[in-house]
Amino acid sequence: MRHRKSGVKLSRSSSHRKAMFRNMVTSLFKYDRISTTDAKAKELRKWADGIVTLAKRGDLHARRQVLAIIREKDVAHKLFEDAPARFGSIAGGYTRLTKIGLRAGDTAEMTMVELVGEKVEAPAKANEA
Image (cartoon, rainbow, N blue to C red):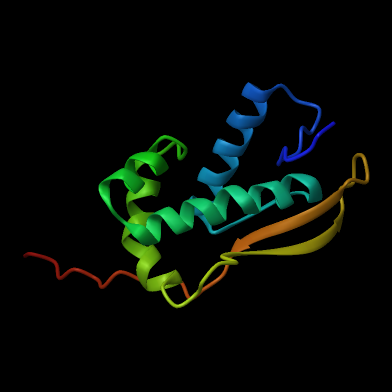
């Protein structure tokens, strides 16, 4: 029985599944949107929302927890800088799933995963010349 066991297996070993979602969540925060299959997108939403919640908290322990998941340090640092301004007024639901049709090769349902909220642009620094 699978009582109280969250997450999907996706016909992968646990190490493969963890590595795949770590790569996917890193790409999501790097590019703000990615396309993937419907089942992976629904599970990725759980990973991404948890990471944004940690980034909004912003303390050292949260930063270390996020760096244990996200593969690239600069992506994690950018997330911690932008999260309070971008997601501060939102209390959950930081990702949007949009179905985009079927994949040509095997007709799997594809979904676009994107971050909600206004993208915060850093002020341009004046050139020192």
